[in-house]
Length: 223
Image 1 (cartoon, rainbow, N blue to C red):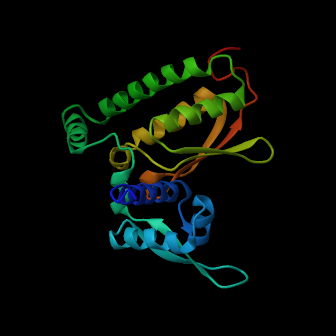
Image 2: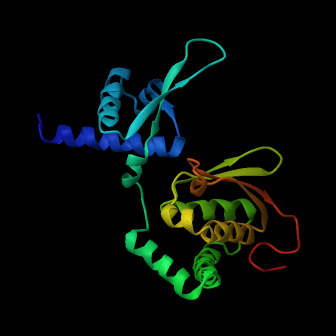
Image 3: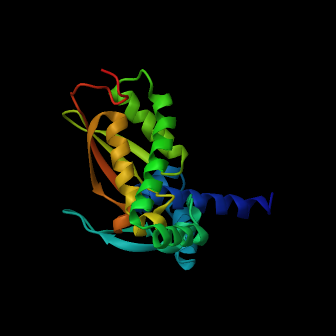
């Protein structure tokens, strides 16, 4: 038996649990057991370790019928396991730029960042219909660490969720980041885009409601 390999596999499984919690927000022992195809007892062992390390906590989920169940959520201590494109130096530099040149200069920095991203995304979206553009946007954002999920709802409405924000610590202080993302999504998709939740506001996810705009252009500046 590979005695050294077993602990590594257990650590890998616990990391998978953390990533699943990040995507779903909260989940029960039964749901975890069904997802991974292992026993509830095995799942509880992993959860006990994660709770001991203070990466997760438990809350009660009440039902209309039947007994309430415990569900598990991430704590702020688990943030270190997820993609993050910031550090203390980056925040200090943003503060210095704001102090030296003013807020309007900070606006321009985020607008330039938005245009660089939009230029890259346009190339991937060229010639695609609305739903294909939306799925391409989700794929590209996911590759950049945003952990994206798209859900199609009725009457042409879509839900786009981002379970992670790689620049969340910057976005909390400089909301231009959030504003530029919203503007970019609407322009690229040629859609009505509404943000209903935001990680920078303390929510667990950024959530967008997206509906195609039946207008004059296709989102890429073409008639």
